[in-house]
Image (cartoon, rainbow, N blue to C red; front, top):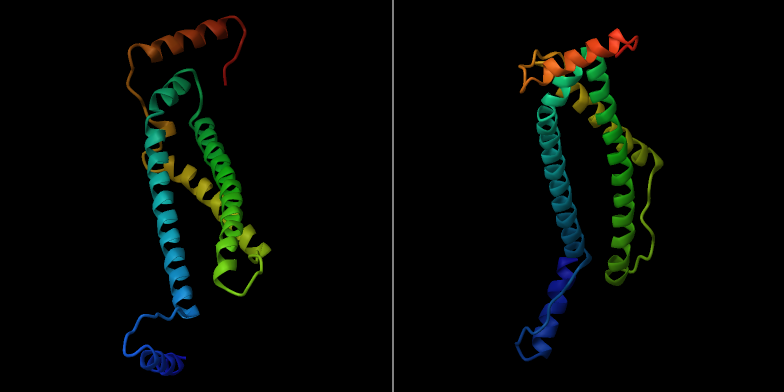
Length: 185
């Protein structure tokens, strides 16, 4: 391919009286450009995912007050762990669905400019296994982030300090409701 480009370039330079006022664009350059764009997109997506996980972990530590109130009114550590796990799993499911929709939209949106630069007018190919694997990975990340957030110091089982008498009020509320025949679980 390069030999043909060199040969045509020499011929055009000769017919243009030694002036190189032309360029060659090959499919290889287009492929490299598309690969660079895809690499940048993957890197950006990875950075966004990493930041999201960090923010999610910070968001849970800010919920210590809520968890403290729930513990004070009698919620067991397993109930709080289950709540955290369900919330993160639902987040993973919603993220998987949204990611699939955005990925489909991006793939379909990219076919329009590609049609003008190549002879190919085909639509993107979606493999069912890839879509299912992507969705499963998003759900797995949600589940693992829920387990990870509650591991280590186990936020659900922390002995939290009294925050402005809130725990005392919660205990009194529990005693009052139980004395009236209600149970809090």
